[in-house]
Image (cartoon, rainbow over all chains, first blue to last red; front, side, top):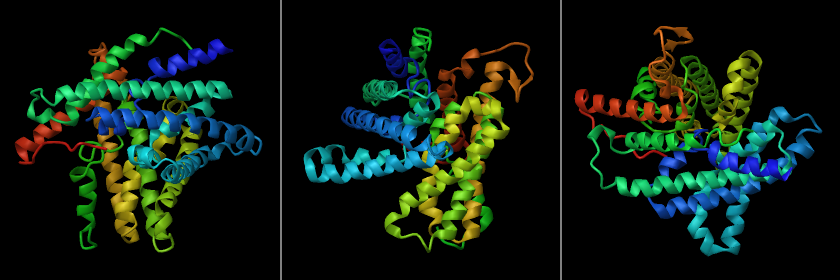
Length: 194
Length: 209
């Protein structure tokens, strides 16, 4: 069983990387990678929230939604828990750890309607993962997402100095660049078959 | 955002002036994810068009009843309800396509473009302008997805909507994950070039969110 958990962890971090093979979280990916510092703050917040969301929604899905046949409401319920949790975390952090709040608070606000966060419980529910598998999936995806953000941020800092054709300045060249990184990530596929 | 703008202008604004994908650079994930074929792009576009229009209409109808303090959660739940509707419809009638892109249909709920139209437009405008705005934005999205889908399916498989046109597969990479990013970058750059050359625009896309 632990081997399967490890497989899911590695697969969701590298092979099914959220950005490069699942194309999720592109808004965040292009939005926050202009500076390394924000990229790191964002990846930290995202991984933490993903982990909590995966556990929370696993409990709700398996002990509330399945017994009462409410699976068809999963979109509404999952986004509700995400919104409620983020709001709670925001309030608690402001009171308990103001220093951390001023560092990460702005990222929290962006999380509520973000496909990366919502995708984790949805995939877990679709694949009918157990609790440990869900956790492995959440942490793996979080680390994979962080890896993507940090790679992109370090390249974009260099890109500022490069001479790019006028029409390609900004987003278009970033897309082409992402394509190249995705090509490299393609090399991981086939490493593990789920 | 005054009410005097004619409905035609509103519609055109959604399709061209503020095209959600290429101009506002919002909701990029599905634009790359589902456009490996024209048909997938079309169905995704239709799903977004439906959710967009219905959310705008609902928000506009309820705008006097929703307490401003809880407006964002309310909009999110309205969107989630309509997404559930289209999700169930798609899984019932388009089984094969749903298997491929069901996750992205469910994730329509997290589209920045829908929430931002509800907040910026539908919550301040009457029913008809909100409806037209939703349809315009949705059609703009649909056209963007179709454009990318045509580009990628033609290059990757040599076919359009499943019908084989070229004998072989000219550029297989176009339908692979990387191809989506390349296609998006190239089309965006091309549109910027057109904008600068023929319409005298600045030709630079904004940073995106």
